[in-house]
Image (cartoon, rainbow, N blue to C red; front, side, top):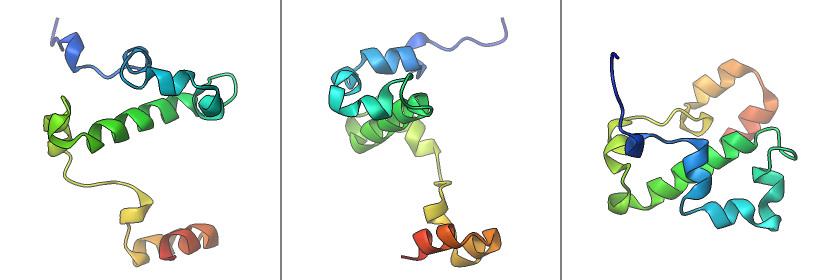
Length: 98
């Protein structure tokens, strides 16, 4: 074995779905977002909801030390206008410059 990571430190789909947000994932009102049979990106949505939820907990989040190591956000909303312009995508340019 090269390395071992304690289970408590792992973020997995199974653990997320059984955790604090489990009722949200089961709620019929959210089925379009979180049901694998109805949403092609359901897995992504589950992880995104979990990470946002944990990030909003701030100091109370078990994962705060991990979040503190992430120094930059890598979403299009962090791009400069020049970086967006390079894409030459009118929809993206419109979305970011609103």
